[in-house]
Length: 125
View 1 (cartoon, rainbow, N blue to C red):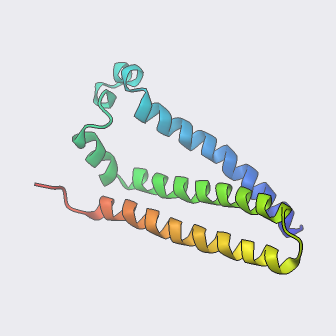
View 2 (cartoon, rainbow, N blue to C red):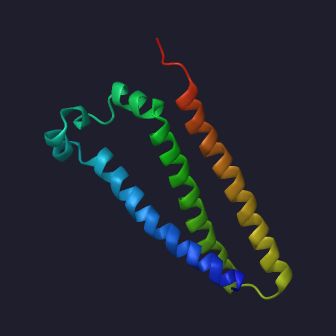
């Protein structure tokens, strides 16, 4: 299978998973009135007890890291595709790809470290 087709298929798959994860995130974070009727603990998602509770959960931390990785891949693959439409030459396309990989790696590292630091940091007193 051609690499372009593999990356395109991975981009579509990441979009589908992003729809599910972002839907769950939006529901939990931005519909507290509705979800508070199901579980009263969800009524205040921005309260510190709720934030620190989610942050101490390894499932939530892993979910944030996966969401970050998928969003970065999906967005940077789209940016790469758009930018390579405007350039001629293999050298420019390789530079664009390298820039996208560098940006993605740096942003993923910063975001994953922030999420993991919050997870493993002791609660404030």
